[in-house]
Amino acid sequence: MTILNLTPAQQDLVHTRFRMTGIPAEFAHRFDDDQLDNLEGYVDGHAINTLKSLRRDLGRWFPWCLARGIDPFSPAARDVRDFLRAFGCGRHPDSLRRMLSNINVFLTRIVGGPNVTSCEMVHAEIAKTARAWSGDHRQALAIRRRGDVTHIEDEPEPFSISRMVDALEPYSTVREIRSRFILSLGGDTGRRAAEYMAATMGDITEAENGEGLFVVVRSKTDQEGEGITKLLSVRTMRFYRQWRSALAERGVDIGPASPLLRGINMHGTVGTCLWPSGFRYVVRCAVREALRLIDAGEGVIDYNAIALQVGGHSFRVGLAQDLAQAGEGMPAICNEGGWKDDRSVIKYVRNIAPQSGAMARLRRRLGDE
Image (tube, rainbow, N blue to C red; front, side, top):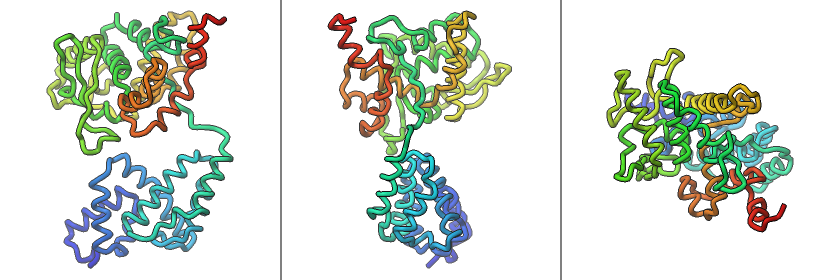
């Protein structure tokens, strides 16, 4: 039995899964019942970003194989090696590992074939790329609570959540209200951009002492939706109430199911929910405006250059660096940031500013010059 034996509605559903995973529709006749079930299970059981990654890599795999007369369903190990070699020039080794993982998903978990990606020649190709790699991915600039200070109790630097929020607080436009709320929320929680985009007004509740609770219903490392609750500061809750009031004054729905964060156009009109790429843009604009106010025309702070280094993960990098500087252990940092392992944390903390490092703190405690 093949896809040709399915009803038109079932065929449409299968073709939708093909599009979601990057499998060309002309290969539909190659799938039997078990393989179609494998495809259905994989699509239904994984997050949209995981499927995007698979679609991107299979979008390279199929054309590359067809151009060389290779069957993409049953390649040899040397074919996989040559594919990595063809796309490995100038790429980070982690990108090749992701490609290899996605090819393996297709060949073994969906097609049900043998694992040809674990051969020594394949892993040797990645190892060779890793040795030749002369750089690293540009890490998003960390947005930290007090900036790159030597000690966590030091006065905050200009590029810090504390100073930037203070600079924005006197202003009451809806854009600046949103900016200080996002900066404060990001500093408290350090979550992924997609998690902020999926959040609703009902995910934040107030506590008796003025603090708040932010429920992350689903995340990259919580696909089952068990949820995790993060504590919000009194300051963040004040900005949250201001944001709600600003939306209500403009007739925007602030019900429990409405988006927590919304776009604002150049005329100040509030729109729909943000996309992850829009979140990065909004954070950059907030940083640029806050630093411009702090600089006050003196030309000391290059706020445009700093803002361009900010990314969707800047709050996460800042969270990891702040907790490491505060002396928290790796399990506590991973738990707070929602990391499954310490690999990302190590990368984030590795690039901490020298004046915030362990040796700088030791010298200060010892009173060394």
